[in-house]
Length: 290
Ligand SMILES: Cc1cc2nc3c(=O)[nH]c(=O)nc-3n(C[C@H](O)[C@H](O)[C@H](O)COP(=O)(O)OP(=O)(O)OC[C@H]3O[C@@H](n4cnc5c(N)ncnc54)[C@H](O)[C@@H]3O)c2cc1C
Image (tube, rainbow, N blue to C red):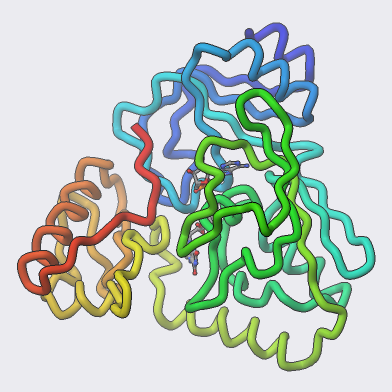
């Protein structure tokens, strides 16, 4: 596998520490870590790996890897998959493109619609997979189509056929290759104000200077999970070197050298206490990869 994929321009690493590839800075080694630069190499990889275990990684900003690492191959889309282009009021980009670069391109071209993604880290693939957003504004509102690999076949899925919901997209078993965003060409000062307001709010309410993976839990219907955690008196609690953020209850931070086990202990504690106090069952938003 290594020779064939390397000859197609892939970067293949063995026993790569996953802590280097996620915003939590936690995780043991993956058997293989492959950066795939184009569709030819990707289809060859999928052919070779047909019976093997693999996982697509974007920016690693919504993921918790296990301390034992990953028995299989972690795949990251690079090269052509990071390209972004503009055609009229549409932006076409690869699944590996950075979401922040797409928003920047939108601003530079006076295109509005992606303001709710301001300050969200990671790639377009990860963002579409998780239907990211802020409040009741989600990225799916401006998606025109998504090109995916599913069951070894390429498919173009128009927005009407996709199953978007709160932090879900229906692309769980797909590889997101390309996305077309349909925007509006009337960016006004209001859009720029919304972007800077979003960024400012993050600086004030999120522990951006300590490794974390964003919101740990989804908000249950009608509740802010951060407030529930705060009201349950859990903010600031430690397990090993992992801590429930003092700033935002729905964030767990790695204060230096935390293990996945520590984070999982806090996740279980929060679930238990919130259920006990409010009768609400929490569902994790971060992906736990074992
Ligand atoms: C400080 C901070 C603030 C955040 N704020 C927000 C916020 O306001 N709103 C919000 O919604 N999220 C937020 N997040 C979470 C996170 O940034 C988003 O979920 C982001 O879109 C994840 O993208 P990623 O590329 O890092 O995905 P990863 O974390 O790498 O992966 C997440 C999931 O997407 C899958 N995936 C990634 N790429 C592909 C692909 N090409 N094809 C198929 N599947 C793929 C992975 O397999 C995995 O299951 C925040 C995170 C941090 C650290």
